Image (cartoon, rainbow, N blue to C red):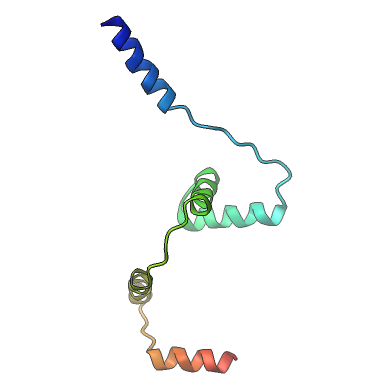
Length: 95
């Protein structure tokens, strides 16, 4: 029983160990950008950098319908509606 308990504890301890990464000489503008992103997302600087690294390491496939649904919800929260014709006209105007 003691050996089984020791093995269980070893499994738990080794699974909880995480790596530490130290970054040096980070350009001021990059640091400021991450600080700004963290504030916008309501996260700590540490959490924001972890999320950015996750996005690079494990990229998600693009789902157009999900993206459009999110855009519609954001537009509704902002309290304005823009028609597809208005969007297309603005794109043409900017070319």
